Image 1 (cartoon, rainbow, N blue to C red):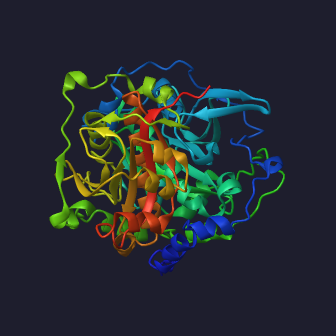
Image 2: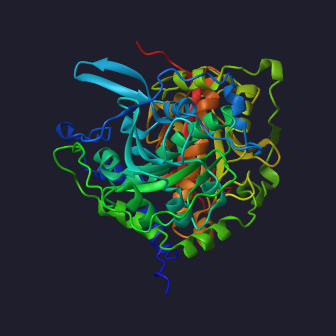
Length: 522
């Protein structure tokens, strides 16, 4: 008898989404405050395990950032097994500490990928077979001292194969990175809305992971379908506080791993407490539980739904008579910046202010084109399918009239919904912050949640948020590759949908990325 599925009770995802919407009323009514004395640590620190130092100066790939971002897939021939130095490169440029700033109260460390509130709620765990210079095991990646810590000895890849219902990419990956989110790290600031941020913040990490895997010529695939309890048990996390959210299968070997050990003992490894006390937000556990898969058979069935060919959302809805098509012209090859991916990631940050200066149409075109070439994921088939539609408020783009547009990827075009000066509206929609009003262009992610949940159940809510974070992370990198700036923002949910209606009618706002020329702050 199979465990009863909760994933198909999609009213639970709809309830969470509606209950966590921002509105002018909800913002005014919110009494939440930041308890700085109780701010959680941004690192998980094991106190009883010796670190395995990772190489501090990994080899540079020399691959242009825009090329790495645009890569759809890597042709698989011979085995592709990462060395420790290559693995260190992927980890550092995905979630490593890349810069620090000193303030009166101490130092703040910033990482390779953007994160809401710089709270860094995601931990990376590695499940590996024997690598050229690393023994098989379950490892935790520690950004603080740039090291690995061995949690379990032995090859546990078979556990992941079982948990993913035999997913081929996992079965033939010498390394799988498991991304786990810690509720309290983000809910300390954002409360119950933190589960949305799980998708965004995990997605930006994975955007970097995919780019670095492509730069090193490793095949990679994002995995969203797995038996949650089995993976959490392997990681030895307390699911009341920390939960596996996604995986990235890296590399390729022809031989499949042996079945995992039938019994996975508890580790009881001590860690440094995150803070003096934790405030519980049961809504976070409820939506995660509602989107959980309970058995390998359910995972296989879920993936079959995800592998059904889907029409691109932007192609489903005709623009009608109001539309004006403006083609996105590829930038001439000689004019495309060739800055390597490592350099761009080190340059990247979340812009705190924008100059009210225009960017070029070619720059916007390059950003949209390179960020939407497709994500290799178990919920997107074929590669290139997309759950989110991209809507754009153009404030200052040379060669493009100011106005509201929808990006039609099939036509490679921006379709104009309405012309006009919408800086004030952009500022309002972005939670009345100056950034979207000052930006040259604002990219809003909207999705037809009803159809996504109908196909993928509540797990589809994880998937649509995760995809938005990955594409958003690519937007970041594509902007910084062209020496521009970008920042992710939150928004007034229903007002965003209303602004882009009637074209966006029935869709839900998922994410927002503002793009422009960053203003230097002294």
